[in-house]
Image 1 (cartoon, helix red, strand yellow):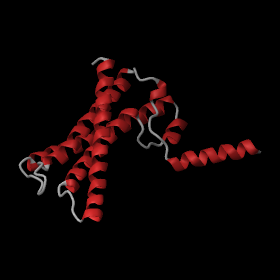
Image 2 (tube, helix red, strand yellow; image 1 turned 120 degrees about the vertical axis):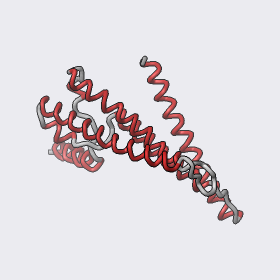
Image 3 (cartoon, rainbow, N blue to C red; image 1 turned 135 degrees about the vertical axis):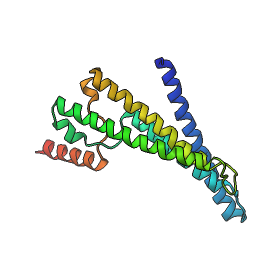
Image 4 (cartoon, rainbow, N blue to C red; image 1 turned 60 degrees about the vertical axis):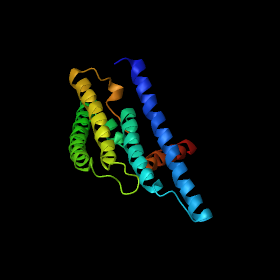
Length: 184
């Protein structure tokens, strides 16, 4: 797959998530205004907002996984040598792949069960909710397989061995410590 096509697909996913977020905000805010201002509302707003929220959550999880931005123990892994970092990355990718396999199997089962069960108000098949998890699991699983393949072929660069983001609290603590050391 060409880099241009990948960038286009990624941009499309991002734009779909933005549109979904805007639609969800409009529905929820519009429903609040209608309820408190006019004693009415949009009956399917809650169902559709919940469905969009599920898709936003799984879509965001994929985008963050693609960028390697999920929380990680980077401080611990950075303290290891290259070999330890390699093994930690392999373990993380393998465990994530296992989790994605379980997610895909569960969502596939639920999608099949709920394909003919419509939501009570909107009539949207409940399978649409589980389809989000299915697609996310397949997508992140593909990322895991690509990373494992790069590790095993030896094509992953050293700076790619440690991925993940530290918690904001740790980053703030480290910045505070640097500030104290600079003030001495």
